[in-house]
Length: 393
Image: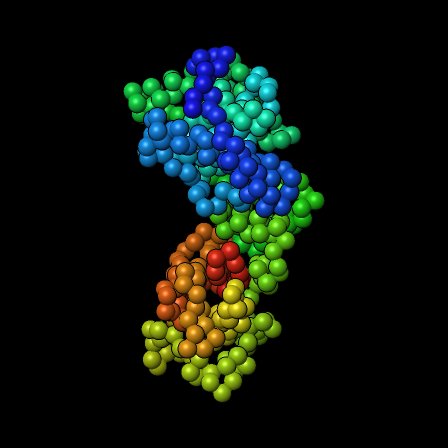
């Protein structure tokens, strides 16, 4: 239901009491009080505003970052919606002060997250109402907004906000090519090993606002990477150490010198007398140079057990050829469906990935070649379980 407010161009929507109750219950899964409040406000905002938007203007509007909202709300206020080629950012606040609009820096200066339009939204939990009291664009935030270093937000005075929400929809339809964004500088990549150290540091829930704990260039890369952000969320929830990223970096060049980390064992140790049956790679070249083969045992969810297996050989140009495989403990047992094996760059980007089907006991990444000095990681995901192994060539 839509109501008129003091300003007839502003939009007020009623919050369902059931939605408010359910959202509050769900928010209690957040590891901190700030995260709980963020999740509560954003959930009732999203679930009230999105149906209205779909019914009135944009039937195809959908959630950006769908499936990982809890991990985002744990550390940053705001939700993004997409429709067509536009992105709409919702920033809900409980404050009754509409003298200025504050936008977290993440939504403005991270290329992966920035939007076209930003809605100023006031939540009244007591009255169960939402007031959309104006909007602005990314371009206006960057050109006329004030940056506040103390809380890493941009702010605009109320008079700089367009308070007639109808203007947004009219402009979107009549001038779809309106320049709403200004390009921002790409953030420098963060090596996976450095990212893990930072995540472990931020896992301490005594740190109330992780987003203010690191330089923005580092934080921006962490929070915009789905895998790292989810890992941080799990760590701050106090997930068991079996899910935690490995701190050890395996040196593959040293493997070629027969020097191995304790956790990476020979096939004889892993499979005993059945090592020849337990380890084989598809598309291995017959008659090729001698290879190094090592494996590591993993405890997976639902009593699952698996091995991560690596095979190395040296190319004529000095690069190291690498094959990576995940397999169940024995051939009679399948991996859980939708088990993911991913190869990540040093910056956390996914280079390749494969997912198990209903009757797979082995999944294997494509063989790749790497020069010495290269860092990479492999990530195993089963439901909410995430394990990361780090390597340097």
